[in-house]
Amino acid sequence: MTRQNYESMTEKELREYVRRNPNDENAFQHYLSIIRSRPGVLCSTDEEFDAELQKRINQQQ
Image (cartoon, rainbow, N blue to C red; front, side):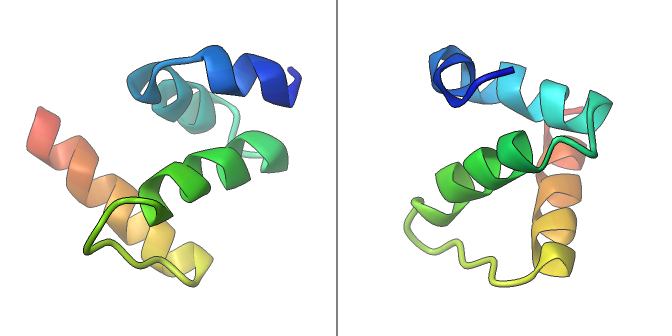
């Protein structure tokens, strides 16, 4: 999948894609950039991203 396709996805679609394709580094980095752009959210490591992603997934269930 190309970066352009990532940018056309909704955040929810991209999150699901990242969950289903954990080895797609480009998708992961694009999703991480979305999360980092939010005020008050700072993820500087993969572990912080994983924790933040899990927290958000749990909130939506």
